[in-house]
Length: 185
Image (tube, rainbow, N blue to C red):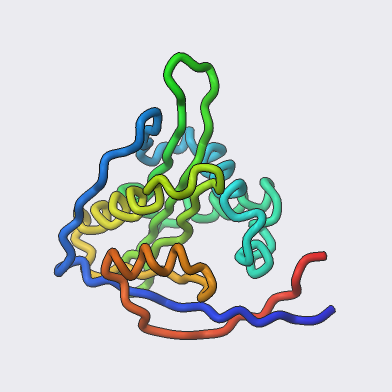
C-alpha cells in the first residue's frame, strides 16, 4: 500500500494577551461541561465529526466509534487531563425527544505546562453555526482560569475552516511537520 504524507501545523496562542469573547449558542444548542457520565457522548460527537476526514486516515482510531471511545478514554484518564478545558455541545430542539451530541473539545496539560487541545470536532450537519468557535473559546477560558499561559494544538494543513478559526482566534503557526499514513480503502 502506498503511503500518503499529510502536512500538519502546530499552532500556539499566548493566553496572557488574549481576550476571550464567547459567542452565544444558537437556539436549541447547549454546552455541557466535562462529566465522566458524558464519555460516550464525547466519543459519539468525536466519531461523527472525524470519521470521514483526512484525520481518520492519519489516526486510525478515528475511523470507528470504538476507536474514538478508546481515544476519549485515553484522554480522560490521563493525570494531566483538564476538565475545565473540555466541553460538549448538545443539540436538543424544543418540544422534541431527540438529542444529538454534535461537538466536542478536550484539553490536557503538556509536559511544559502548556494547554494542549487534543481534538475539536463538530458534526458536519451542525458546522457553520459557530459551534467550533464557542468550544474553542470555552476551552481557552478554562486554560486561563487554571493560569495556563500558552495553549497549543495541531491541525492538518488542508483543513482550511479550522485554520481560519484558529488564526482569527489568535493562534500562530510555530512548527510545520509531515505525518505519513496509509489511506484507507
